[in-house]
Image (cartoon, rainbow, N blue to C red; front, side, top):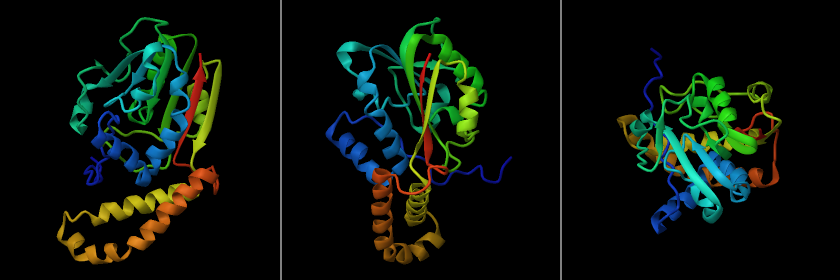
Length: 250
């Protein structure tokens, strides 16, 4: 077993902005969580265009469901039983085994799948299932991380390049792969995570070092500013992004 099996700094549960407190958490989080910011930037313009039956795979708390047009979509969310181990409790979804989607062929008009594929060991099986349950000309938006730490241990298996993604989604008639962020954004995101991982006083050493990290707050502020500037103006190289967004058509 890997010596890195302990996950000391777990990902924060992502919840929909359905209450005032959740809105503050949802939109406030994107100030510091650049990965979530880039995902949101990519899907916020796509989901309102979806129509018909929409399947959200690995939906967690369904954080992006609110972006769908309620009067013109029928939402279905599915997730694995193991999600409850990471504080994801959602009674309004269908449980599945992570590979076999429990719906008939050609059921859905659109698919959402955010930050899931890296957690599926038999990823090609799941992609084949996505293709199967899509109606002809159905659309899907899928996001995956590229520069991201080992997380949701032990259910984190892969990172994918565009070359691999083209082959993985080759059954679809149209595949558009775009990077989320640049190397500058990735570096800034790492520094932000480094700061918060060390400022949480859960050991004697971290308590001793806390004054140092407090003194580094101005550096954190500059890093956050550079990160947002780089996201907005695409500063840096897109060959080492935070992740990728894949838009596909069956």
